[in-house]
Length: 253
Image 1 (cartoon, rainbow, N blue to C red):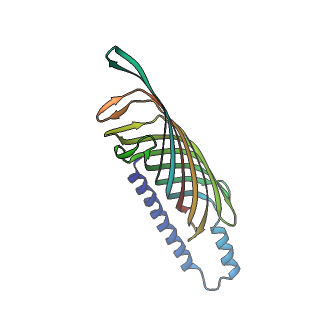
Image 2 (image 1 turned 90 degrees about the vertical axis):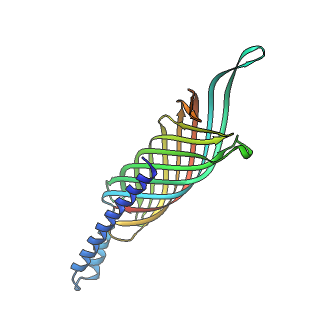
Image 3 (image 1 turned 120 degrees about the horizontal axis):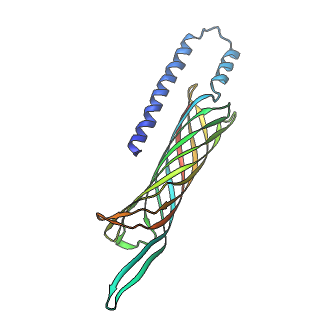
């Protein structure tokens, strides 16, 4: 799923639900008689701010990411004055950089505090490899996409929450070094995300919030990669990624 499609999906969903919720809130307010007691209003407010039914949360935030790659690019055979000789490329490299992450959580409330559901993640990070020095290096792009299942637990009445998801992930890497452009895709790997945040209700069903999130992913990149129109490989490359970020969120529940 491309970033444009994900952004469009998030804001379309929340525009629809926000509009419906605002209309419902306004409609109910118009129908209330002026003779309602203060206790009745408080009772209605408490009931409407419980977590129940359909749950949707979209988050967007800035991130800082650290990637470590352990690689074995396999044997190569070169020719010198004495014939062919064997060599191999093994080692590790790392990348640090800032980026942007989008997440979309969809689930169902199983109680006033517990929500079970899934999360879609897309993160893009820009930076340069640690073993690429000087003017021969340029920005590299790392895209992480994930699909996970997990839960949200709300601490009431503060409406702060803890969320944990685990699932599958994949990487796409585009890098340029020493005047060569590389493009690689990973196998499916493992992903886990942890977040803690707080939300404030703005209507009976819409809340806005802030949160911090940590995401870890492990992927193996064992397929061919493309460099300047040519395919190379296969090779073995293991990618560990750790991404932290601060997020703004909108929640429907």
